[in-house]
Length: 122
Image 1 (tube, rainbow, N blue to C red):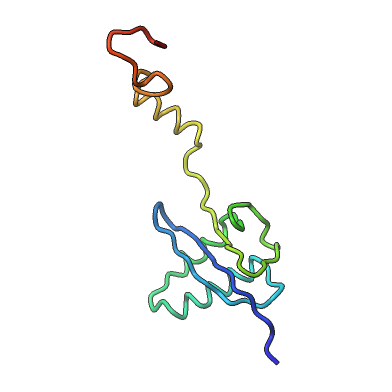
Image 2: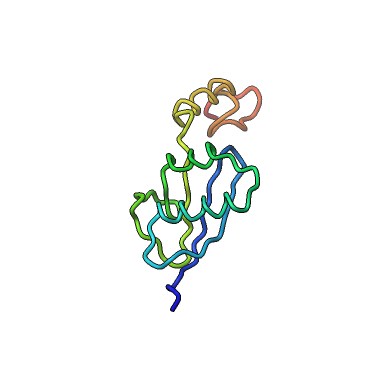
């Protein structure tokens, strides 16, 4: 008799605004690492020119389920969306400071649409 399977979705992004999604049927009681291994095996079969270095880089990303970080040994359930997160290249606080410095304080924030000639804050 066949082992019962569940359906999960694996999502990853190798670059900005390029999200790839794959629906998988995995054995019940499977963990996140096993889902990734199954997905890599299926992807290698479907892609004639699959790059092994690109696929191996997926293993070093932080996994999550529905936007919450989990460990590689976390078991998946029916309908889970397993996501692989890339490491941040820039600290969000630093990026915000640079953006604010570039835009200037007169055009941003609470008082961005003030009347011409009025004092700041009015």
